[in-house]
Length: 124
Image 1: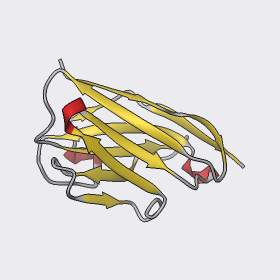
Image 2: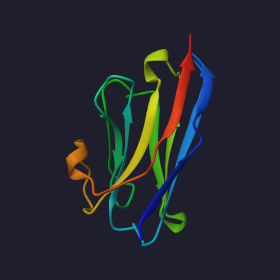
Image 3: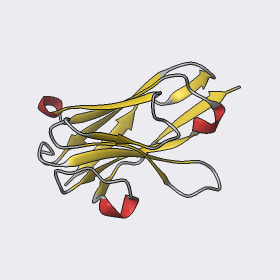
């Protein structure tokens, strides 16, 4: 059974940093792209960042470009999201996802497996 478990969320002041982790189990995801999405209260789930199977290709939403960095460690079956210069508008539940393709994608319906999410709250 495929399982994705996010961790690293919490409460941080504006301008601070957090590092999210997503550990995958149940199968090897080394050949699959992985991504992060987020959903704020009353809003639709939105794309944040994605990384290709090798880590060689990344893509970010404009709202986080230059502040967030996605990376992966295939030996650990884990993807990370380093979030710097956090803003109150970054407050959301953050989800990691796996796409059964080597290539990146920025829409939720292109991903096949999802974690349960981790809450990130940025205070002003």
